[in-house]
Image (cartoon, rainbow, N blue to C red):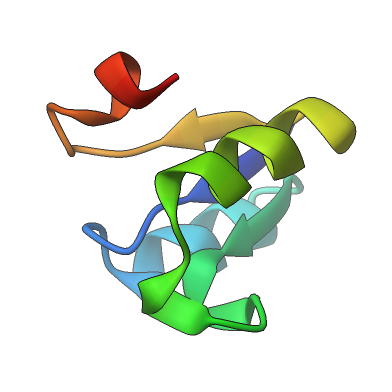
Length: 63
């Protein structure tokens, strides 16, 4: 499984998922960091076939 952890969640979560063997990225590692737009996150998740982990309630609406 491949994950993309959104800015609303701690980088530590991404690290723990990596340590568990999952291919994981956090928005802090993207060019715009935690300012990355939901649209870009959506596009990246589709392109890289990643599951987005977020607690942003408006994220689903933006998709």
